[in-house]
Image (cartoon, rainbow, N blue to C red; front, side):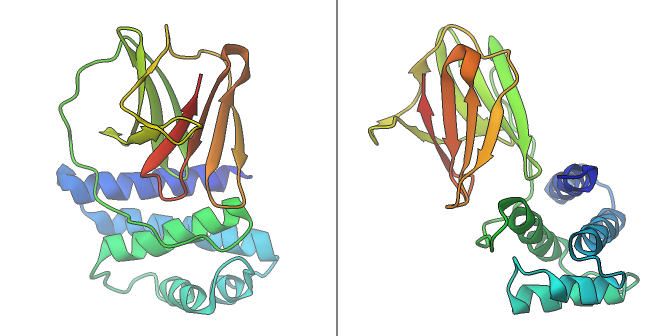
Amino acid sequence: MTGRFTQLGRQLRKLRHISGGSGADPATTVRRAIQLASDLACEQTQVDDPPAAFRAVTTIDTALAERLAGYASDVTATIEDPLAVGADLDRFLRSLELGAPAAAIPFEAITPRERAKADSTSAITISGRVIELEVTRGHAAIAIDDRPIAMSLPSGDAVASVPLATAPTSKPEIQREPSGATRVAWTLENVVIEIAADFASARIQT
């Protein structure tokens, strides 16, 4: 993965914050994201023309490729629905990361939320989304983009939290699963979480 993967994820996250009411104009952010995606498409396909490069990417379907090619062909066009464009760019990014077509998932604005501060936190960024494993008074929960998500044990039993003394501090190993899920393992602390492909739930093992 090149730095453009990270940069595109950051721009898409910025777009979601702006759409959540930061007051900034989303147009510049969307155009920057389109440029980064175009560079990625050219890099992945070795095709110098961005519209043609999007059409040559094998991990996205024809309809998505045509929409992306359209964005790249006229970067000065008025963008009526920035989040819709962002959703296409997000799907493109996740497809490249997965190495296979990724499903369309909600691409929503990030709005400020009041949350109690955790005693310790481990945070990683995946596809422009911040995943936090938060430990409060000896119990761990998972939040994505400041929003707590549903959790379950490997057995499938739903839980609100799991016992954990403190959040991991080692560097995690990150692995993409064929299903689109992402496995994150802090091996030294024996903590593993598997984030669902739609980022709406997670499985946790401690």
